[in-house]
Length: 200
View (spheres, rainbow, N blue to C red):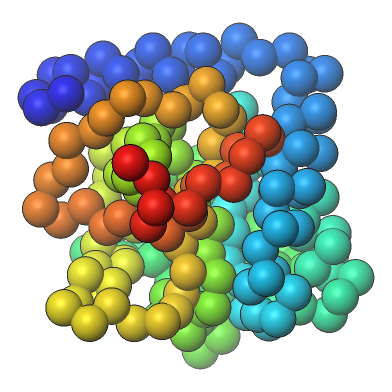
């Protein structure tokens, strides 16, 4: 897949497929996802975790969020800012949220409480499609690629670890990456945890 038109067609197909999932399958997938994520050693030791508020049929993180709260970990949600930059706000059971201009719930916090992406240790990234080499098909806004561009340095920083999250049917054979695309370290589905560094 090389053209913008092909990417848009793939986005549309995957959106429709995801939207058609019955509720029972979504619930089972969320449970399967938690089992896969629990294989991550980082989930045990990392204290500053970033995730997302599932919308439009995205694979839900609600079970993981509840686990993080029980363990006293700081769970953060993205807040969209200018110049396609994300910062993150701590999210807990008492957090007030409001929809962003994209309709995605964001925590309502003071500017001074926002956390930069580089301060997180583990980030769970939503997606529309992925391949086993860690290439992600996002929504076309460029927010994640722009916000985590620092990970493309010659010597990639140790953190945060980027874990793409999606249903197993969102896997495609191969995505042709753009120069600005930031690779994922791992991908978690309801069925498996894929290490993109060893994927063929």
